[in-house]
Image (cartoon, rainbow, N blue to C red; front, side):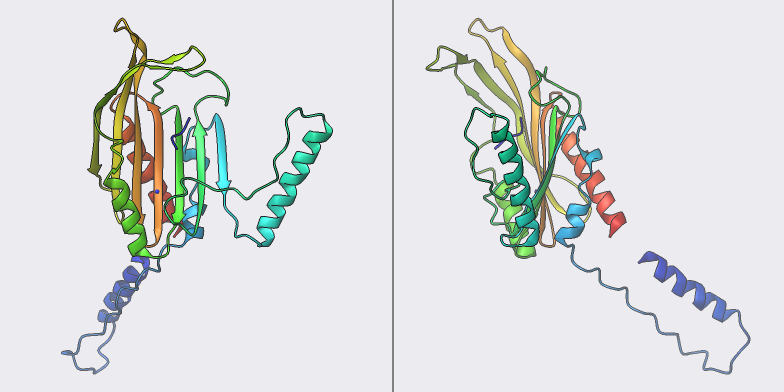
Amino acid sequence: MLLARPVRAAVAVVALVVLAGCSADDGGDPTVSPSVSATPTRAPLTFEQATAALTPDLVPTTAVEPCDEYPPGSPEAQEYLDRVAAELAAAQAEGAAIPMPSPTLPQCGTTDLGDLRAASLAGHAFALGAPVDLPVAGGASRAVDVYELADADAAQTAVATEAADLDGWAVDKETPRQDNADGTYLPRTVVSGAGVAEVDLPGWTTWVLTRDEAAFQDDGSAAADPYSTAFLWAAHDGIVVRVQVVGDAPGQAAATALDTATRYVTALDAAA
């Protein structure tokens, strides 16, 4: 369904200064002000911190699909491959009719960012394989992807590139009916309300791309109810976050994506 990113210490210092001012005169020079420590610099956000904030409450929870990448050759990677191989062998032993592929390491999210590693969490408001009527308030499907880039500049460049919308995804357009070789067809589709906008996510450089989609039969009647879709991209330090929302009420996917990203960043800040 988804388409193919120390205040407490300062208070303590102030309290100690006030208490010292109320104490007896120690004979020191009253013109000399006590030194004040500089505010400590916050350490760069790490991939481990970013992935720890990927919690199921960020996405619809009827069907949740987590994804974690593992460094090739690592114990975690070997454990994953062994587990998948055992599952495939069990399926073959039960008489699975289709050939089973060799186990491979998972690739999360999009693979064209040049990221070092990624993790993601996808959720659906319906059971996988079950029919779904769009739109669904809050999105029928939603995903949050986290990517580790080489550095902050690479993260900013990745988000800026996505915001440029080079393939024209967030542009109003119309696609005529398309006939398939098997006799089925794709009805005429209309993309409207499309656009790219910078949005406020404190501490992050954030852009959201969105559009509404509607389908029509040859006689002009609606082939399905219109719905909205959005991609939100955000960069901070060397981390990129992507939020995807599909199947939301018309005009609402961008707001859902920003709300999801805001809740994610709030949880991340609290943990950090």
